[in-house]
Length: 168
Image (tube, rainbow, N blue to C red; front, side, top):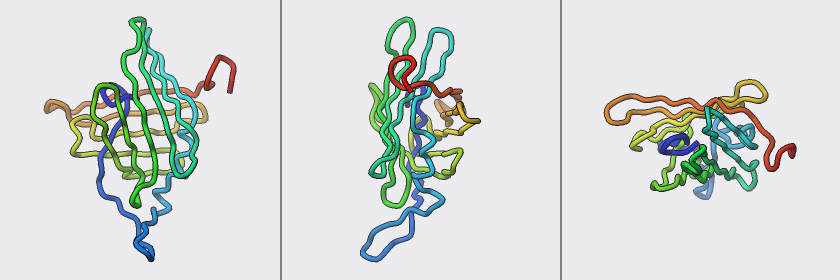
Protein backbone atom coordinates (compact mmCIF):
# COMPACT_ATOMS: atom_id res chain seq x y z
CA UNK A 1 0.00 0.00 0.00
CA UNK A 2 1.29 3.43 -0.79
CA UNK A 3 1.18 6.32 1.65
CA UNK A 4 -0.53 8.56 -0.88
CA UNK A 5 -3.09 6.07 -2.09
CA UNK A 6 -2.31 2.77 -0.49
CA UNK A 7 0.17 2.31 2.26
CA UNK A 8 -1.15 2.70 5.70
CA UNK A 9 1.35 4.79 7.47
CA UNK A 10 1.07 5.58 11.13
CA UNK A 11 2.93 7.59 13.74
CA UNK A 12 4.80 7.22 16.92
CA UNK A 13 2.55 6.88 19.95
CA UNK A 14 5.36 6.08 22.33
CA UNK A 15 4.81 2.46 23.25
CA UNK A 16 7.94 1.70 25.18
CA UNK A 17 9.25 -1.62 26.37
CA UNK A 18 10.72 -2.32 29.76
CA UNK A 19 14.25 -1.04 30.28
CA UNK A 20 16.90 -3.73 30.74
CA UNK A 21 20.23 -3.42 32.55
CA UNK A 22 22.70 -1.38 30.53
CA UNK A 23 20.04 0.90 29.09
CA UNK A 24 18.79 -1.60 26.51
CA UNK A 25 15.09 -1.68 25.82
CA UNK A 26 13.06 -4.87 25.47
CA UNK A 27 9.97 -5.02 23.30
CA UNK A 28 7.06 -6.51 25.24
CA UNK A 29 6.11 -9.96 23.88
CA UNK A 30 2.62 -8.70 22.98
CA UNK A 31 4.30 -6.25 20.53
CA UNK A 32 6.96 -8.52 19.05
CA UNK A 33 7.77 -8.17 15.34
CA UNK A 34 7.99 -11.99 15.35
CA UNK A 35 4.18 -12.00 15.48
CA UNK A 36 4.05 -10.22 12.11
CA UNK A 37 5.72 -12.92 10.01
CA UNK A 38 2.31 -13.59 8.43
CA UNK A 39 2.81 -10.31 6.52
CA UNK A 40 5.75 -11.80 4.59
CA UNK A 41 5.19 -12.79 0.98
CA UNK A 42 3.31 -11.32 -1.94
CA UNK A 43 -0.12 -9.69 -1.88
CA UNK A 44 -2.21 -8.35 -4.74
CA UNK A 45 -5.43 -6.41 -5.22
CA UNK A 46 -7.10 -5.91 -8.61
CA UNK A 47 -9.82 -3.38 -9.33
CA UNK A 48 -10.65 -2.73 -12.97
CA UNK A 49 -7.32 -2.16 -14.70
CA UNK A 50 -5.63 -1.09 -11.44
CA UNK A 51 -3.27 -3.56 -9.76
CA UNK A 52 -1.86 -2.93 -6.28
CA UNK A 53 0.98 -5.18 -5.11
CA UNK A 54 2.92 -5.55 -1.88
CA UNK A 55 5.97 -7.80 -1.60
CA UNK A 56 7.52 -8.20 1.85
CA UNK A 57 10.60 -10.17 2.82
CA UNK A 58 10.42 -12.53 5.80
CA UNK A 59 11.80 -11.52 9.17
CA UNK A 60 15.58 -11.43 9.35
CA UNK A 61 17.77 -9.51 11.79
CA UNK A 62 14.64 -8.05 13.41
CA UNK A 63 13.36 -6.46 10.20
CA UNK A 64 10.94 -7.03 7.34
CA UNK A 65 11.70 -5.06 4.18
CA UNK A 66 8.92 -4.47 1.67
CA UNK A 67 8.00 -2.74 -1.52
CA UNK A 68 4.75 -1.96 -3.24
CA UNK A 69 3.44 -0.45 -6.43
CA UNK A 70 0.19 0.57 -8.05
CA UNK A 71 -0.19 0.25 -11.79
CA UNK A 72 -2.95 0.74 -14.33
CA UNK A 73 -3.29 0.75 -18.11
CA UNK A 74 -1.65 4.21 -17.92
CA UNK A 75 1.51 2.77 -16.32
CA UNK A 76 3.09 3.11 -12.89
CA UNK A 77 0.88 5.21 -10.61
CA UNK A 78 3.08 5.15 -7.51
CA UNK A 79 5.43 2.99 -5.46
CA UNK A 80 6.69 2.70 -1.91
CA UNK A 81 9.48 1.07 0.07
CA UNK A 82 8.68 -0.02 3.63
CA UNK A 83 10.51 -1.30 6.68
CA UNK A 84 8.97 -2.98 9.72
CA UNK A 85 11.29 -3.45 12.67
CA UNK A 86 11.64 -3.23 16.42
CA UNK A 87 13.15 0.09 17.44
CA UNK A 88 13.50 1.54 20.94
CA UNK A 89 11.12 -1.03 22.41
CA UNK A 90 8.34 -0.65 19.84
CA UNK A 91 7.43 -1.98 16.41
CA UNK A 92 7.68 0.71 13.76
CA UNK A 93 6.46 0.88 10.17
CA UNK A 94 8.67 3.19 8.15
CA UNK A 95 7.29 4.23 4.75
CA UNK A 96 9.18 5.82 1.89
CA UNK A 97 6.47 6.65 -0.68
CA UNK A 98 7.19 7.97 -4.16
CA UNK A 99 7.14 11.74 -4.32
CA UNK A 100 6.48 12.23 -0.59
CA UNK A 101 8.50 12.57 2.61
CA UNK A 102 9.18 9.42 4.62
CA UNK A 103 7.01 8.72 7.65
CA UNK A 104 7.34 6.49 10.71
CA UNK A 105 4.38 4.85 12.48
CA UNK A 106 4.30 2.82 15.69
CA UNK A 107 2.32 -0.31 16.38
CA UNK A 108 -0.46 0.16 18.93
CA UNK A 109 -1.44 -3.51 18.71
CA UNK A 110 0.11 -6.55 17.05
CA UNK A 111 -0.84 -10.21 17.20
CA UNK A 112 -0.91 -13.37 15.09
CA UNK A 113 -3.71 -12.00 12.86
CA UNK A 114 -3.57 -8.20 12.85
CA UNK A 115 -1.45 -5.13 13.39
CA UNK A 116 -2.40 -1.47 13.73
CA UNK A 117 0.11 1.36 13.35
CA UNK A 118 -0.61 4.96 14.29
CA UNK A 119 0.92 8.35 13.62
CA UNK A 120 -1.51 10.93 14.94
CA UNK A 121 0.68 13.85 13.84
CA UNK A 122 0.88 12.63 10.23
CA UNK A 123 -1.17 14.55 7.64
CA UNK A 124 -2.87 11.45 6.16
CA UNK A 125 -3.26 8.68 6.95
CA UNK A 126 -2.95 8.60 10.73
CA UNK A 127 -3.77 4.88 11.04
CA UNK A 128 -2.55 1.94 8.96
CA UNK A 129 -3.64 -1.60 9.57
CA UNK A 130 -3.41 -5.14 8.30
CA UNK A 131 -5.68 -8.04 9.26
CA UNK A 132 -5.26 -11.62 8.12
CA UNK A 133 -8.52 -13.06 6.80
CA UNK A 134 -8.24 -16.80 6.32
CA UNK A 135 -5.20 -18.41 4.79
CA UNK A 136 -5.01 -16.49 1.53
CA UNK A 137 -6.39 -13.02 2.24
CA UNK A 138 -5.22 -9.88 4.02
CA UNK A 139 -7.31 -6.75 4.48
CA UNK A 140 -5.16 -3.62 4.67
CA UNK A 141 -6.52 -0.17 5.40
CA UNK A 142 -5.56 3.41 5.90
CA UNK A 143 -7.66 5.72 8.02
CA UNK A 144 -7.62 9.25 9.28
CA UNK A 145 -8.72 12.80 8.73
CA UNK A 146 -7.91 14.58 5.50
CA UNK A 147 -9.06 18.16 4.82
CA UNK A 148 -11.35 17.95 7.85
CA UNK A 149 -13.10 14.77 6.71
CA UNK A 150 -12.57 11.26 8.05
CA UNK A 151 -11.60 8.85 5.31
CA UNK A 152 -10.98 5.09 5.43
CA UNK A 153 -9.75 3.14 2.42
CA UNK A 154 -9.54 -0.66 2.44
CA UNK A 155 -7.38 -2.89 0.29
CA UNK A 156 -8.65 -6.48 0.09
CA UNK A 157 -5.49 -8.35 -0.86
CA UNK A 158 -5.10 -11.97 -1.82
CA UNK A 159 -1.88 -13.95 -1.56
CA UNK A 160 -0.18 -14.57 -4.89
CA UNK A 161 2.98 -16.29 -6.07
CA UNK A 162 6.08 -14.12 -5.78
CA UNK A 163 8.08 -13.65 -8.93
CA UNK A 164 7.28 -15.02 -12.37
CA UNK A 165 3.94 -16.79 -12.85
CA UNK A 166 3.81 -20.18 -11.20
CA UNK A 167 6.82 -19.60 -8.93
CA UNK A 168 6.00 -19.83 -5.22
